[in-house]
Image 1 (cartoon, rainbow, N blue to C red):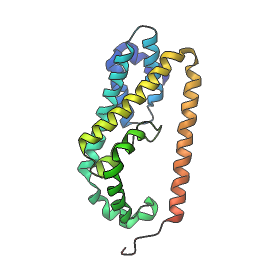
Image 2 (tube, helix red, strand yellow; image 1 turned 180 degrees about the horizontal axis):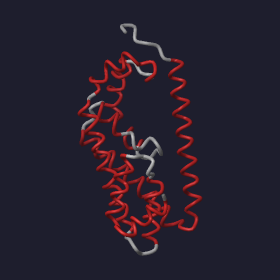
Image 3 (spheres, rainbow, N blue to C red; image 1 turned 30 degrees about the horizontal axis):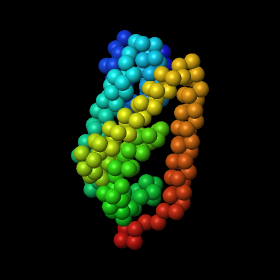
Image 4 (cartoon, one colour; image 1 turned 120 degrees about the vertical axis):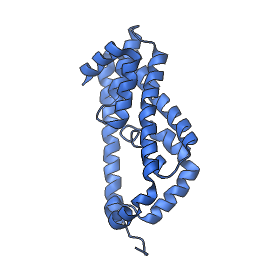
Length: 201
């Protein structure tokens, strides 16, 4: 995959970076942890400008983020109520949890979206709860853009600085991603074990 990404960036420049980051938000198996460091290496070699690499990567990712947000908001959490009430155990969710999440999101949505954009694996999914729980678009856009820009800048910066040691950086990011997956899986099993249905259900 690295070779294909590198060729596309070499041939298409900033447009290629933006396009790849857009795809990354739709198909997480195309990782930003590969795209942006390679673009950063191109900037270090003088073929691209670092600032424009970050801007194009952020713009592409934000286009995908906004599409997911709008799709989730159009669906709406109310349409999922029958599914949650019927299969809440396997979703580890009760309808009362949704009500609490809605109130929590009103207070902490900015923080959730910003930090979520910096967490491997999770970052591509943040738009969905933001849309489902009706987070204000302006707040979503600000928090998501800031978090996405910081993430792309860090990854491009790693490629710019490390170059020859990029494999070591990718190994570290891969380990972090695996750790997040393990934590999420453990959290799901814990919630599954602790789940109790709503009394009214």
